[in-house]
Amino acid sequence: MARTTRKTGGIFSDSTKIPETLVNKSLIPEDGIAVYAAGTLKPYYLHVKKEIIIGRKFEDSTENFLDLSGLDGFNLGLSRRHAMIRRTDSGYEVVDLSSTNGTWMDNERLIPEKSYPLKNGAQLRIGRLKILIIHNSVGEPSGK
Image 1 (cartoon, helix red, strand yellow):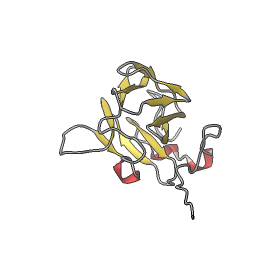
Image 2 (cartoon, one colour; image 1 turned 30 degrees about the vertical axis):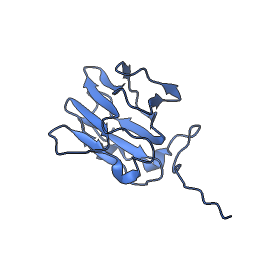
Image 3 (cartoon, one colour; image 1 turned 135 degrees about the vertical axis):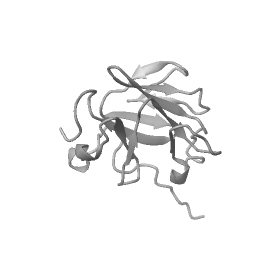
Image 4 (cartoon, helix red, strand yellow; image 1 turned 90 degrees about the horizontal axis):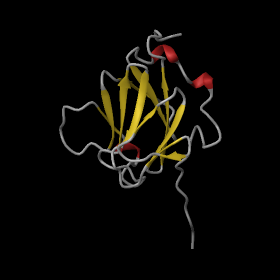
């Protein structure tokens, strides 16, 4: 019987952060973030005026939404509305939206509906998909 394995890792793992040479902070919107998903080389650059929902988009919505269904999100355990990144006066925070398979930040499981400060370079695991969040400090222009 032949066995196959599916690669769910990629450019970083739990113990290794993404190489700084792959991060181009000048492309990160001044009011936003860059999201690097494991197994991909091209980041998502997102404006975050107030908040952004991460998950699998299932209907037309006016919400600011990062749809990760194209990264095999369903099979990796992403809920339709899995987590939220919200802009605050001092930076960003992340909230698990009572997802079925949970959200972890730097290997610590988040309590659903509780907000956590989201530091630059934080690694999130949403379901079984790993993502890295890069942002400019609040008040810091992009490219610095």
